[in-house]
Image (cartoon, rainbow, N blue to C red; front, side, top):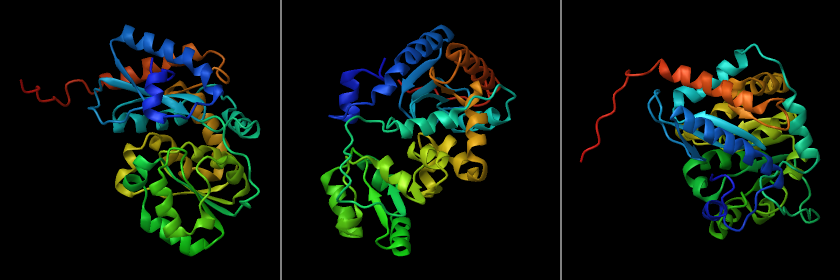
Length: 297
């Protein structure tokens, strides 16, 4: 199991430690892996790829302290969110759960966030950036320049905790030292104070901003957004800001969403079973539609 494997985490997040609230997901990971093994389906933690619709692999990761399942196929992972919203199921109050995460300071994925805010007065606008490995490939610099011109010094750029000093230096050169927050400061303090939140399809900050009623807009490079970890959720959040709490509750309550949380779902094991039944049936529709070329020896 990779979600809580220290050696694996050292490779991915280095010195950072995950929020302890995520520990309840370890039992979910174990059950999910067992059910995949029984079904003969491969599984992989925190990866993205685009296999054929008759996919080989189900991916899983954390999303806003939830366990999130999706097939490694663009078509089907997008379809599962549409099917989830259309599903006729019992509605659970996921929105209140997410708001409580923020109020109880459990929204951060990582522990030990800096809460010394004296040097940085809140501003009306905040840009939330991904880690260094994604900044140059996923973020539209022209969009950032446009926003900087629009909002001037009434906007912060918040670097991801996994951001190199080089990238932070470049941000300061582009947008001014006074507009760049420290990478380890508690981003959610400033998110709550802002009116407008500019973030990406690969960030769980989008759902927290949305559920707080902030205006959200993307800063991604258009050509890359469909391969973002949370594209299939965040794309719909952007389109449903007018009725966001209802959208979140209706969608996340359905097993078809792939969202699982023992703190919210009465029977999370049954929800996983129903998700697997749903997505494997969907997968079966595409058997033999596309044939992979045999690997060359």
